[in-house]
Length: 98
Image (cartoon, rainbow, N blue to C red):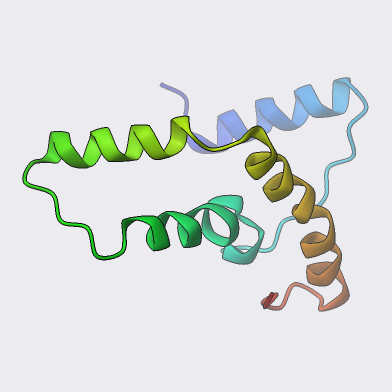
């Protein structure tokens, strides 16, 4: 297994080889993680008030929820990164509130 810094360096080299611009990412910037700002809110609302008898019941519900999400749900989350990233740059890395 690679140390995390080794994987990061290999990834940076790969991106540079293909001409991608590498932008600095603010440390611990949860507002730029699609899972935090786009996925977990809707998932929390979906699961709100539900109770599960077993772990398998929960896993089944999660699979069902994910299977029924439209591709546009994920597209919107990724596309919103552009404006969120710009806000973060404009705020010099400070927290970006919706």
